[in-house]
Image (tube, rainbow, N blue to C red; front, top):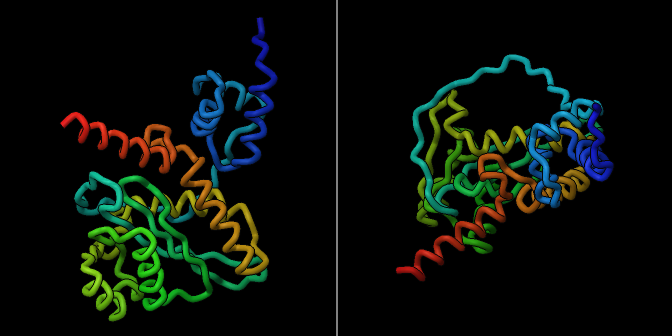
Length: 244
């Protein structure tokens, strides 16, 4: 006897699959659970396949997986941020760049700066703005790009008392947290939209960043969003202090 599925579940799963086109069935299961649906991933997968909602994998050309040296683990929020650049094109064909900044512990997207040119001086201004808003971590981690090795960056870091951790050349996976973020950023937003102007790009990217922090569940965080993970961590720390 064929099982009749809950029409509300089917409707919501279909809606989510179209809204979040780069989410697979496991992440969609997390989204459904967050909305109150009592489902497991097997049931969602069955419906997902039966109604043709499968995620179509993108073709990858020249993909290489490189193991770098072990990086010291972090144990608290704001202990280390990782930075990197992502390039894209407007619908006019003009290139633009984004500077992505991620907290290695909470996976929070600290900020995404968007412009046609992002120099070492611009990176310093972005970090100075973040320092005034929320403070800086003891360590910043990135590759050996000229923006990060510039005199402006080195001088600023000395004044701000921040350690600069440069990964080994040709070892992007030593910067795994921001590389993973950049993959999601490109897959879920940049590859899905064509921006007519830099202003449209900035608005859409900031909206996606907020959604990433507040609504998007992360498997590496036990199905929590970065915001929920931070709240859980703070609650746990407060409980420990109270017990002591």
